[in-house]
Image 1 (cartoon, rainbow over the protein chains, first blue to last red):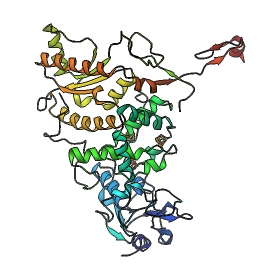
Image 2: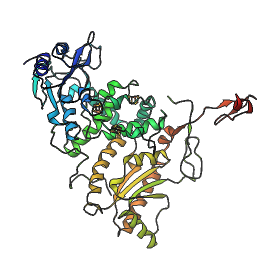
Image 3: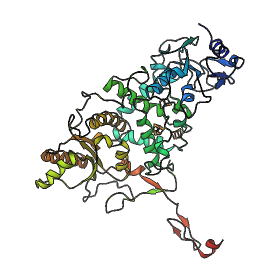
Length: 287
Length: 192
Ligand code: SF4
Ligand code: SF4
Ligand code: SF4
C-alpha cells in the first residue's frame, strides 16, 4: 500500500483536488492538522499513532478551508464522521476524495507514547480498523491484540450505582464546565450554523457557567448527538475541564444499537436515526 | 465546585425554596408538569374534567400542538423550574393528527430516557403515555399513577441542589453591613 504523502502528491499534481487535509509531525509523539495545497507541501504529510484529530471537522460548510474539491486523510472513525455528514447532506460525496488509512489504534492524547495501555479507549471497541469507504487506501498502522475497554467498564460501574449517586457524579463533573464550547467546535457532527446554546430568544440554556446551565448544556449536547455521534472522542480530548463526555456519547450509541440496531456513520444512503421512525419501535415504557 | 455568586432560584409555586430541604415537610405536594398534545391528551384531560372525574390537582398541563413538538429541552426546563416529575402524553400511534409526529417523538423519548437515566434522573420522575381524546378515564388513571410515583420519590432535591442562578455575591456596605443583591447606587458612586 502507498504512503499518505505519495497519494496526496499524486492528487495535487494531477489537480484532482485543491488541497489535501492531513497530519504533519509536530514534535515527539505529536501531530497537527496540516493542509497541503501543493505537491511539495504534501511531502510533510504523515500518519502514525499520534494522528488523533478527526479531520472531518474541516469539511463542514463553516469550517472548510478552500472552496472546491478536497482530499482528506481519514481513519475508520473519521470516515464514519464523513459518512454521517453525507447522511445529513452536509458534505457531498463527489466533493471529497477520501484517503482512507488503516489504523490499529491511536494514543489517548498528544505527547503520550503509544502502547497497549495508553491506547485511546475508543480504539478498544473499534469495528473499522480498515475504513469502510474510501477513494484511495494508504498504509497506516497495524492492528494489535485486544485493547482494554476502559470506557465500557466505566459505564458499567456508573450504571451499577444508585440514581442519586450517579446524579451526584455527573453534577460534580458538569460543575467544572467553563462553557468554552470546545467540545462543540471540535465535533464534526455539531455542524449547526447557530447552536441552541447561543440562542437567547428564547434562552433555553443559561449562558453563565452555573451548575444548572452546565447540566442543561451537557445534556443537550449529548442528546443532540444521539444517533449521530460516531465516537471519535474529540470532544473529550478538547475539553479543558476533563469531563468524561465520551461516556455520555457511548451510552447513547449503545442505546441506539440495542433499541434500534443502528450504528451511526456506516451507510451514506441510510436515513439518520432520529430523522426517521419505525412503526414497530419499542414502546413498553409508554403507558 | 460551586461558583460563589450562585444562589438558589425561586421555583414554581408559592413558597421560595432557598435551601435544599433535607426532610420532606408534611405539607409537601409534588409538582408535575404534563406536556400534552392539543388533539388527544389535552382533549382527553378536558373530557375528564367535563365528566367530573376525580383527579389529583398536582399536574400543570402545558398544551403543545403535537408530541413531535416536545423538545427534550422542555423537560430539562421543567426540572429547572422546580418540577418534581414530568409527564409527556399524546395521541396513540397511528392516531396522530399530523400522522407521524408521535412516531418521531417516540424514538427521541427512548434515547432521551436512556440519557436521563444514565445521569441519574430516576425514571419514576419522567413518564410517557398515550391518551386519546375519548380516554378521560385513562387520563385520570395515568395522572394518578404519576402523582403517586413522584410522591413516593419525594421532592426532587438532587436537581434543586444544582438549580442555581447567577447573582451578585453578598457585599459589605459602607456601614459594614452584609447585604445581598445588586449594590445600591449611592449619590457619590452615581456621579463618580
Ligand atoms: S449542541 Fe446541538 S444545536 Fe449545538 S451545534 Fe451541536 S447539534 Fe447543533
Ligand atoms: S460528540 Fe464527540 S465523539 Fe461524538 S462525533 Fe462529536 S467530537 Fe466525536
Ligand atoms: S469542552 Fe468541556 S468545559 Fe468546554 S463547554 Fe464542553 S464540556 Fe464544557
